[in-house]
Every structure is written in structure tokens, then in C-alpha cells.
Amino acid sequence: SGPAWNAALETLEYLAKHGVRGYVTGGAVRDTLLPRKIRDIDIVLEASSEVVLSLFPQAVQPSAPFPVFIVPRGGHVFEITTFHPDKQTLQENLEQRDFTINAMAVDRSGRLIDPGGGENDINRQRIRSVFPQERMQEDPLRRVRAFRFVSELGFSVDELTWQALCTAGNGLWHTAEERIQREIEKLLTGMDNSRALGLLLRSGVLHDFPPSIRPEHVLKKQKHPNMASFSSIEEKWTVFFFLLYGGQAGRFVSRWPMKKSLQKRIRHIIQVCTANPDEIEWNTELVYRNGKRCALQIETVHQWRKGKQNNGTLEHIEELARLLPIASRSDLKVDGSDIVKLHPALPGKQIGHLLTFLEEEVLQGRAANTHKELLSLVKEKLSHER
Ligand code: ATP
Ligand code: MG
Image (cartoon, rainbow, N blue to C red; front, side, top):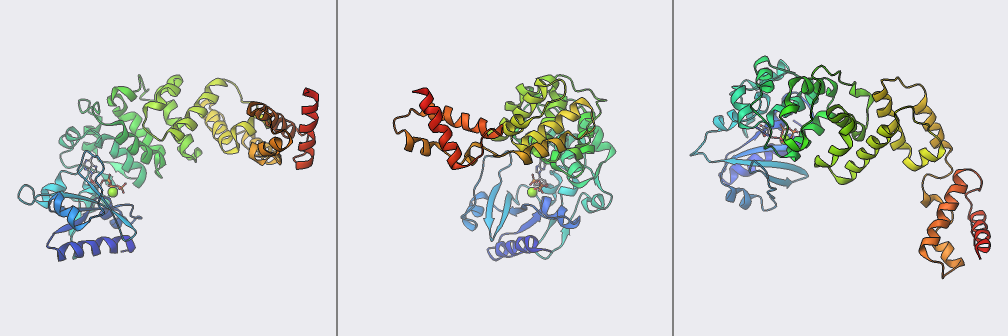
């Protein structure tokens, strides 16, 4: 039940009216049985791509290893795949999926179709494949997905499936980094991320990563961190990179295809942590330059690397941040245009220098951040320079 589920069943009705048999499948069925909030809704159709496009003109087909259509409809997003009834049965389609908990379908009357025993595995809280060796051979990304589901659902991995996961020879050498990155991000943000990360490290799967992002040596016995200490995605990725690449972490970030802005923030945390083998001496200037959020992230990761408990430094950063007279240059009560009004001919570079000077005076408490005071500082400075 729930609006997403009702929307899914309504879509099946719409399809039936046009003579197309469709089923809700994948994560939507799994999450409904759990129960857990549904994300996107996977639907599988006995139809051709042309039929999908004619029934859902708004469908878009991003390049994907699976031909999947993304269909926004009534405030929900449907991910539609197809199979040809002459070439495959629904049963066969489900059997090709990664894990039994993802290999169920529901028809428009609400009947559950569950050839692999997925419902039973949900009740027993386990990630299991039928014929796991074959499944992992077909698509080695499943070796990573397993740990993603461990993290998101808190499940354990069935013994035979675990063995197949750990078996070398099912390398991810040709798997797109982007697919790996998406699964790892879900792993890192899942509720059982510490345990999932520990299993991933132990499994040896990392050694079969594509060469571009393969770590040289991950200690199998390496103690994994308690991920509960890290709240932001920046911290989680940074810790992950340190675990995989140690001192080389900074070099590898750009090989992972996340957003450039996120890469930049991660690289910055790595850089500050590696540049400070000892404690970081937080002061007003440093907190200001990094910003409070980033300063806290740096200190949190740094403490983990040093194997230290928080000894009040995080609170110290909070305090320094609270006492900052300005959070950024744009908080100054005088800006570039005020200076131009005073001296229309002043070159841009010099305006920049003046603003840096004002910023410093305010930060160090030598000047109050008022329009009047800063303007007179500017005048004074300029008269000196004449
Ligand atoms: P989420 O809730 O995160 O969307 P999901 O299980 O729906 O989880 P998707 O990536 O959306 O994951 O995939 C939808 C379904 O397609 C899966 O449930 C599974 O049945 C199938 N699937 C996806 N990726 C694979 C894969 N690599 N191998 C086999 N089946 C897959
Ligand atoms: Mg899905």
C-alpha cells in the first residue's frame, strides 16, 4: 500500500487497458514486503520498446547496460524494462535477476510471483542468489550490490552466495566505474554501513575492481571503522578512500566518477588530513577558511586516522565558528561596488587586495564589521598609498 504502490498498480491497469501485461518488480516489491519506503518503481512489460514509447511518450532511455526506460508519471518515477514473450517467460526474466529478494513480481491483481523464494529470504533477512556462481559470472557488479543491500537492509549474506562473491575470476575489470560508484555510495549511506564495509573489505572484491580504481593492497584483516562517527557523505567517501588507497587516496579521487564538486570537497579533506601528521591547530583563520562544516569534517576524519577519541576539538571548532564575525567575504558590510564608488578608476586587482585586507581586519577583531568603519579604513589605506 501507500501512494507509490497505488500509482504502480494504477499504471498496470493503464497498461492492461492497452492490452499490455505488466508487473511491478525489483526494489518496489521487496521494499513493500519489508516494509520499507519505496524509492523508484521498477516495472517489467511483456512488450517491445516501441510499445513502451507509444504508451509513455515522456519515457527517456539513458544509456544503460540494461535497456531501461525512465518514465515520470503522476509524481512518481517508473523504471520500465521489457521482455519479449516469445523469447522469455516472466519466470525466466525473474530468474536472471541478482538476488531472490529482487526477483519477485506482482501482477495487477496484487498476486505475488516469487519463483526464487524471495519472500522467505526477506523473512529470514538474507541476501541470496539462486545459482550464485552463474549470477556473479554474468554480471560481476552483483558482487558489490550484495554489500549494498547488506548495508541498506541490514541483512546477512547466504553462505553459498558469500562463497561465490569471494571467488576470484568474476572480475569487475570491465564494469563501468560509474555503476560501481553508485552502489558504493548506497553502501556508504545505508543503515548498516559499518558491517557492510567490513564484509566488502573481507570479501576480496576490491582486488577485482577495474584497474583504474583498484587498490594495490587492502589488508584483509584491516579493522573497518565505525561508520556511525561520520555523518556526511564527504566524510564517508574520504574514509573509504583512505581505507582503499592509504597515502595515495588523493590521487584516486578523480578516477571515481562522482560530481566534480563532491570530488573537490573530498580531495580537500584528504589533503588537509595528510598535510597534518599531528594535531591540527584550529584557530579563527583556519575555521574561517575552511568553513565550519568542512572544518568539522576534516577534524572528524583526522581523529579517526589518528585513532583518537574526540577530546573536545570538535566543540572547540564549533566555538571558534560561533565567534566568527563573518562567515564569508560576502558578509562584509563594504563590497567591491562601495570601493568603486570611492575610486572609479581603481583596478580590479587592487579592489581585491582591499577586500582581503578588510576581511583580515574584521576576522582578527581589529575592525568592527560596519559600513562606516570599513569605509573609513578603505579611505585611510588609499590615502597612504598615494
Ligand atoms: P533501489 O530501491 O535502490 O532502486 P533496486 O533493487 O530496485 O533497488 P535497481 O538498480 O533499481 O535496484 O534495479 C531494479 C531491479 O533490476 C533489481 O531489483 C533487480 O531485480 C534488477 N537488477 C538491477 N541491477 C541488476 C544486476 N546488476 N543484475 C541483475 N539484476 C539486476
Ligand atoms: Mg529500483
